[in-house]
Image (cartoon, rainbow, N blue to C red; front, side, top):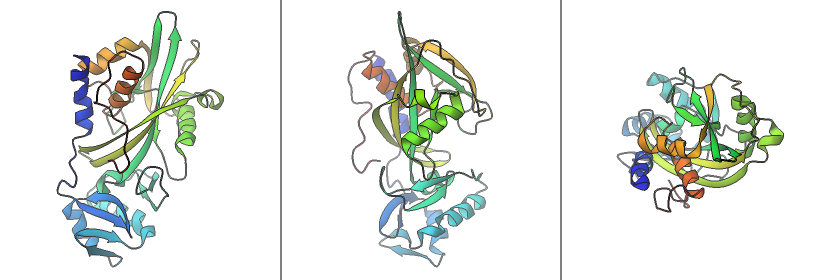
Length: 273
């Protein structure tokens, strides 16, 4: 029963079927994204862009930040002012940079980190749950991990984890460096902002019982410490958690023996999503 009711979260995050009417977007020879036909037509008018075998090829990757900002302004979408690396696959070399808001517009792979902040008590395992601030543009007011965030240009996943831990929850660097990598999750999802192709690097961190997270940057409205079975019930019965947090939590429930093994969350394979 748990598995069937949890599966809807995985299916929701994997609702994209590529190409799905999109056109492959390349930086020179490297396939990095998927664009809608209207954007493909806009790009085709740029001298440094060519159409080759039905694909859009940008031959000057250094122009991508400016081109993406123009496309965002044309659609009256907010520019985030935060650059992300553009890669053909997770862990590959950076081929260019793009404003964070341009990632789903161009269907470009994004990397993120998620931390399960765990507390072990005599009566079982607990999880720190964050409630997102109401001013957040994405899923305001929903529940989230104690620490989670996208990997900005120039930083590694672990460097991002340390930075986000300090900014979001005031976790000291010497403590967060004890976090253990526990897996990777990827998905391709159609959302209002476009095509999200995300690759999540997941970590567990057991925190001392007397540790209390503190919101530093204002992105979190409050923190609560929940018994892990309560988290499972909330994920199973509601959509109260941010959409991709559910995937990481389902994997946590599986690893901690709260649910059985099933194929709802699978390891990322080469070439996915």
